[in-house]
Image (cartoon, rainbow, N blue to C red):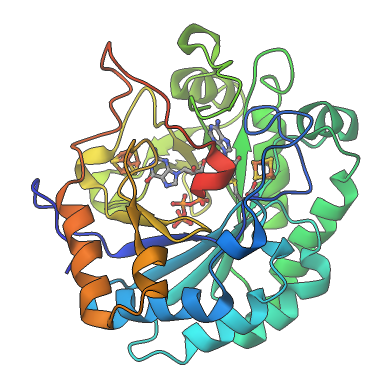
Length: 329
Ligand SMILES: Nc1nc2c(ncn2[C@@H]2O[C@H](COP(=O)(O)OP(=O)(O)OP(=O)(O)O)[C@@H](O)[C@H]2O)c(=O)[nH]1
Ligand SMILES: C[S@@+](CC[C@H](N)C(=O)[O-])C[C@H]1O[C@@H](n2cnc3c(N)ncnc32)[C@H](O)[C@@H]1O
Ligand code: SF4
Ligand code: SF4
């Protein structure tokens, strides 16, 4: 079991498969990209599957999410999913992606055993998409979303970050579209994780702003804490349900008390929190020939040191040294 000193148990593992990406979302990466990890520093497919096996069979992890960077850029993704689907107990598996290339791989991922996908899409307007992501790939994302739905990678969730002056007027429009498509839309408050440190609390769109905007067109009824469990998204029934909309309000309504997450970076470091400033080196242990029990011990030890929360409200808060794309958002 991965338990911390606050009694929280981590059963949800987020695995970053690469720090690279084919978009350059302004809230995540600079235009020129980042200093990418060198190939030899990345975990191999075998190393990733071994760490997931240890997490699942020895440490009580039940949910595995593949993320990045852009996880669809990892050539071995389908094989990794297939091998993890053979584990006993079999973890539930999901993917968080920008959707580019999903049209080609959705069915293969489903056949390999992936359960569902979350796709990031901040806008329905191609020109705004280009302003946010610095790439002309809006159509690819829309096609990827449809392919995921058709392949049964459901519920398909859509993640949208709203930014002032860019897409903050689009919340009702996005929700109407998601309802029509049968996707579950979640709005995400922008977090201070961009490498250029451009984030400002008074410049972000808050959960309160988003809900007020949605209520101009829809009736929202809170789903309640019991339904939420440890999920980052607080959800509302739309016009009486059954459709829902979520808001992930890491900044204004943090959910750290119920956190059940542990993270693995693409270069094999355990992070106890998105905002952690320390990491534990599992890759070094793997490559020096440590047996499974030793890896499991190091992982438990790391989680025991997990902080109470993100620290966003501490006057001494410092952004993590790694950008979001390298942590595995
Ligand atoms: N603060 C915080 N944000 C998180 C955490 N996990 C995910 N997020 C953020 O929530 C947003 C959506 O993340 P997803 O990868 O779609 O995962 P999720 O919402 O946990 O996934 P579901 O299980 O499908 O609800 C992203 O911006 C993540 O960075 C977390 O543990 N803490
Ligand atoms: C880092 S991305 C990795 C997976 C994939 N490339 C994608 O975009 O879905 C994971 C999620 O983090 C979100 N994200 C990135 N930077 C963020 C920030 N500064 N604040 C809030 N969410 C952010 C993205 O919108 C996306 O939904
Ligand atoms: S949010 Fe995802 S798609 Fe956008 S730059 Fe970051 S890793 Fe790439
Ligand atoms: S900010 Fe850290 S402690 Fe809070 S929910 Fe996210 S990962 Fe967990």
